Image (spheres, rainbow over the protein chains, first blue to last red):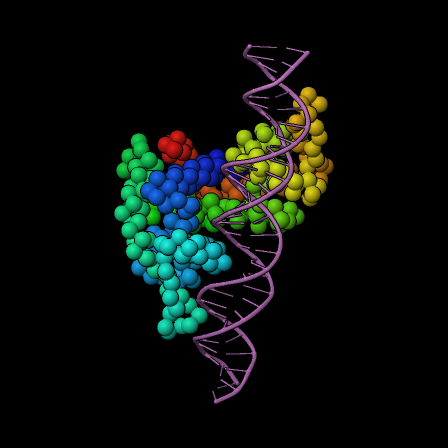
Length: 139
Length: 139
DNA sequence: CTCATTTGGTTTGACATAAAACCATTTGGG
DNA sequence: CCCAAATGGTTTTATGTCAAACCAAATGAG
């Protein structure tokens, strides 16, 4: 139904997501999906974020972020405390257990990039990213 | 967390899916998502298919196909009958109501392609597809 | 011909996802 | 200062998704 580019894009995303889930399981992060990984990844970078900020950077609905963060809380990867300046808001941050995953995460990311770009030259990679950017901006 | 290519791929797919859902709603196909559209699209082409075949061509789990086809049944877009040669199996096909959507579907597909490829030359389109194919094969 | 195994599809349970409604808190116009 | 409107986050509901278990039918080895 859609152009072959979009079918390929869908297939790549599905396969990459499955790859990431398998890698996370292999590194001991059972039961996590890429959306959890996305949250953890952003917390590695920003240290602490509000639910609203997590919603914004991940592109997920705030109710979805509630469910995802609750699961990461249950599993002990994150903690949250009220923002002293705004009692409506939380600061979500990593626990020591969550922080300990950073190394594994960047290793997984590296493995993903290696797999993704196998046999693709640096120039072709840049071409691809440039084309995808332009396409993204078309919507 | 992931290479920018994969982040772009995820974003494009999300936006394209939303675009498709909005276009389907605009053409009177309320409540359908791209997975439904994928099934209908394949039925436009193949006229009738088994659940197993629909699972194979869409890449969705057979239990998911059961749920999606049931909804299309409820909405009156498809019908199904037992395969006389294999009582376990169904033939799923379009109703007149479903068949009437073909024109709208190809129009939507056209609009998607026009939007997707706006400002992208024919050569660049071919480059993109070739690169995406190679990447898909890496997983 | 018998029957263990496989197959096509459904059901069950779990989970991610989003939309809408809700609650408590914050904001800022009057 | 008051309070209507907006905001941050949760809850509820619905749905797509998958894995595992299940059932009925088909298959093919013995």
